[in-house]
Length: 352
Image (cartoon, rainbow, N blue to C red; front, top):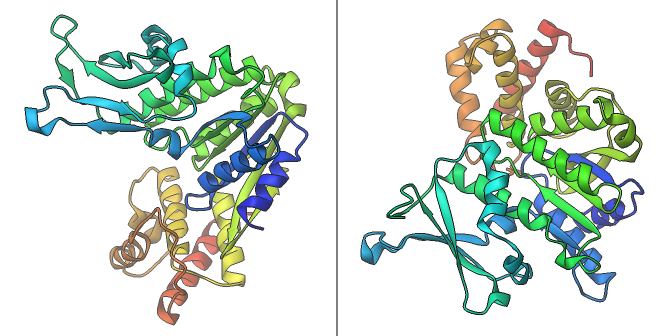
């Protein structure tokens, strides 16, 4: 299937809460765009839902004001279909969402003279007296943008026009572990508020976020009202095709998913990007054993010259971790891959 087919498959799901787990580069962002295009086509070219994805983050661009020594540095907001709803947002609305992340800054909205055009930029500052503009970190920026959209999700002005669904794609790409729990909490709050009225689709590459949401919705204290309305999936890639596969198990264990994926690749065809997944598996094993080194995991499975093998894995898996490499492995690298995978299975006897 391609992303258009997957979008149609998602659209046909009856349940209101849809969770999708996928590795990076599988096509999650393109799927969100395909879903948007499909739902617009079915509604005379008009939006029916609201989205948070990489394109949402790209609406926010720094104006560094280099010509004036950063005197008026601010975060510009590019005009979009949601700009007309900015007038319903106040600073406090976003501050309320940010509270759980313990921000170390304050901010002001800079609005157009015409309120219907929305917010032109955001100025951040530490000192409330001088309000000297500052630039926040990339991680802080991601959190701010997420909270901006959380506040925007609560605007009732689009009721009846863009109220059919919320589509959230990877809101945690630059967050630490603590903030992933916080972000999961904000998504669960959204689900609590909207799950009976609209569809909520969450796609993520982050095993922690997927696991928290999956467990809360399917087995948590409030799961009685959610579990029959929740449909979990895995988005899988097979060379140039993707497939949306129903996840039927009670627990999602990342290392077993990796083992299953790599085993299938060995039986069919191995590509350079599979070394990225192999490294993730070794990191997962090393972390479980209390070490942070891939070489430690290699030592435990009796790989000769673990340090050198780690260097080889690093070279093959870090060309660009976010870009899928479709180059076939040469015979030497393929044999190395298969040997490591075999030794992992001989040592730990994973059942997947």
